[in-house]
Length: 134
Image (tube, rainbow, N blue to C red; front, side, top):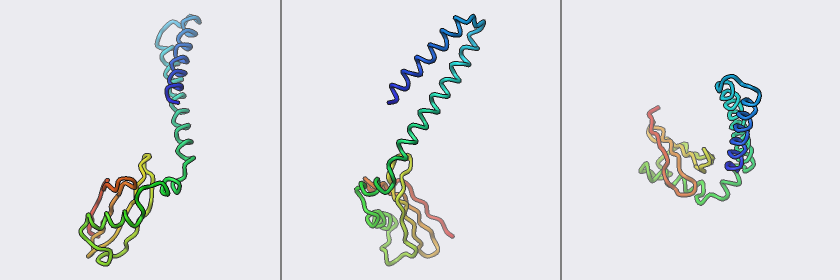
């Protein structure tokens, strides 16, 4: 899809240049401005199309296709922190898709410290974590 759009973009840019030259455009600067404007418009359309495609797949569908369950993601975060579920409070997790990556955000508390983990929903990899003292 992107190749087709890029091909169309190139065709449009060439068309603008030919029209600008045929119309007696006195400087190439004006033609470049027109081409840049068209390029910006095409990029905006591509971004809108990509966003529309992403929005067609609901997070719940992605979550159902994820290799890990919510409980498994919680267990990974607890293991990484060195705790068991009965040693922490406020254990909660939420599924999210961030930049196309399915992930679980896991949070819990232990002795006044807050633990936040981001676990890849397919691989179980700890993508990030943060420990802060409230």
